[in-house]
Structure formats: structure tokens, C-alpha cells
Image 1 (tube, rainbow, N blue to C red):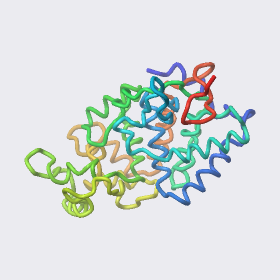
Image 2: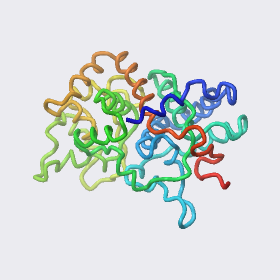
Image 3: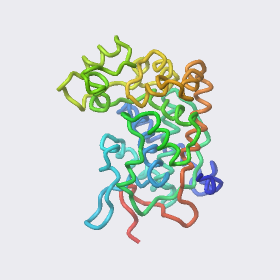
Image 4: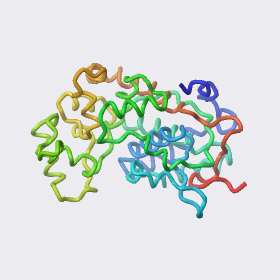
Length: 313
């Protein structure tokens, strides 16, 4: 669907203009990871949410500007719980010191995501580069971001809308929930009143349900955090998929991959649960595909000097 522009991205895009780009990004994110074990999950989520609105163009990184200016995508409901933006600023500063005006904010998200997944035990892949940064944001477009409380049909529709038609990509990218946390408010409806008749979601394992109710009591703090993967919370592995097989997916959008009767996703969950290597290879391919959604290239967009605002020229 959006294949035409893919060929313009290249893993060697900065080979002559900023050859040390990866090591510079790595230095910053390693430091950030020492302070925040969740930074990998945070930044891959920002990359994901950026790509689903107008393509991978760094538009999510823009802050609100003066009246009549940018209305930040950060104010969109799916993005209110995103974070890690200060680390993006730190990466940008480090790159501007060495290769001013060269590396885009959109590419920073792609590079940082790959390095952090790898640092947390996950795969590496050849990150394709050469995206440029948007000069606009699309707050209304944030409605196209998949949500944790949506049905499999709705999520699949949102993936197809950005050209990710293969359910394998949907399942693989969902596997990024092998690390990170979610707020109680994102799944509490599953625990107490899933059907409107006061019953929990029947697809939750009863023991897991009790644990979740203790961590997220009715009327408790909706911002309290729970591990997306209760087995290896900060490691990038295929336990996410064995959790789903055991009815221990945290969000509705996780568990529906396995519990939706007749869905193509069920066999894919089983495949990845049986083989971490298969998951890792497919995840890397899916990240490349996602990173190829409608990038700005050539003379389109710009290279922002500050990821939070468009250049003044």
C-alpha cells in the first residue's frame, strides 16, 4: 500500500554524513537504561505511535506551539501515557554536537528502538534510515492508533489502514509487550465488569485475575503500573506468547490474539511461543515494515534541530 517510498530508505544512509550515529545513540540509551529499566518499552511505543499517524515522521515528538501553531499529538488519548521524550532530546543533542543538521528525529526513534530491544535481550535488525521530520502534527489522527481495550477486528483494521495487512506483523509487533508496564485504568474493566453484568473477562486465568485485582482494586489508583509480562518483566523474549496460551495476557488487545475463536492470529501465537528464534526474526522484519510506513524522504520535511519544534526557517 505504501511500498513506493520504501526503496528510498537504506541501512547505510548516514555512512558518510554521520558514520558513528549508532554508537552515539547507543551511548545515550545505555545511560538512560541504567536510570530507567522501562526506557526500551517507552521509546519503541513512541516509534510505534508515531508511525501510525501520518507515517514515521517524528510528528509525535512535536510539542504544542503558539496559538494557530502545532497541536501536539501527545495530547491524543492514546499518547497521554507515552514517555521517554527527554531521552530523545538527549540523543538529539549528542548527535547535533557531532553531525549537526544530519540525523532526523524520526530516525532517532527507529535506531533507539532497535538498540534498546537488543540490550534487553531481543533481536537486532538492519534499521532502514533516511526518514525526514514533518513540519506538522495530526492530533485527530491519533484515533488511528491501536488501543489496549479494542477487539481483534478493530486492531486489525487499524493495522491494515497503515498497510500492515499481514496478521503475522500484528502478532509480532504485539510481542513488544514482552517488556514494559500498563496502567490499571487500561485493563481494569477486564477485572470487574467486562460484560456490563459485573463479571470479569472469562479469558483471564483465575489465579492471574486474583493477582491483578490485588494490584488494581476497584476504586484504586488508576495510574498504578503492572508488568505487561508477569514472567520476565524487563526482558525481551517470547514469554509474552506463552503467557497468552496460559490466559495471562494483560490487555484485551493482547489476549484476543489467542482467545478469538477461529482467528488466524492463534496459530501465529503458538508458532512464536514454540520458537523464540522465529519470533525474533519475524519481529525484526515487522519493525522494518512498520518503519517504512509513509516516510518523508528527499526534499520533503526537514531535519529538525530540536525534536520538539519545527525549524524556524
